[in-house]
Length: 288
Image (cartoon, rainbow, N blue to C red; front, side):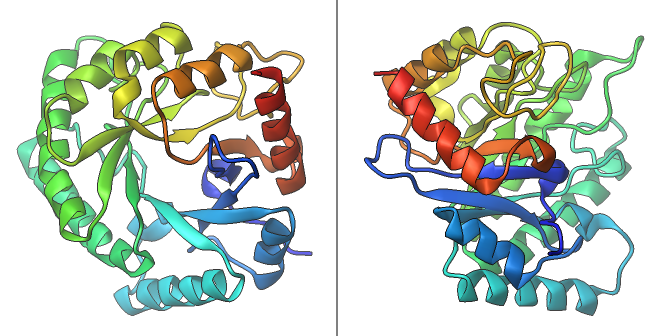
């Protein structure tokens, strides 16, 4: 069987967080490849929701080829009985909304506005966006990069609203923009139609509990996986070397009033779709 092509080589499980039965989804890369048998495996595991990744759209391809692949993917998703919850917008060093150079930033924003318009065919509830791409280097103004990112987010939020979606900014690791709860607060506060995608695997500074306490009411979607707090790993929760307190995390999200999908982002070698459903049930049981 052909392998499932997923964002960041990862599975994403979406589930109605406080529902009695799990509802699940998986993030798929359109350009990388999408196959009916892969989607059937996802559906058979009890997964219902898809986060579509269009990361590869930025590469040089004829426009008609991009649209053909997108519409073909949509048909396969619908034929499999799956639903699109969110679209993950492209991320690469060549597409950085925090870049200081105004010409490069304008080119990047125009690109994202086109991709957001294309994303409308999936009718997503949320669009997931990285607040930057390159790490911020020594000697470079972090404050200026964050300011450029916030301005870009405000503009792209309008494009998201125009297709009926909410723009969700994802926290990032290392020295990237959005590496702390405080930076995510600055990047998203008081901007209409902007929320947060909390990636548990990206938080290297501060605790998950602190992140939820500060930003919980703005978190509208999740990317869930375990890690060693040194760098992103995309492990299945409860990994033997994992550091996330999943009981506290689950209870914290519930206390924050989270109503969205519980999304897992786990490399396939660490978890099949059925593994993700099993782990979520385990998480719910342990949190009681």
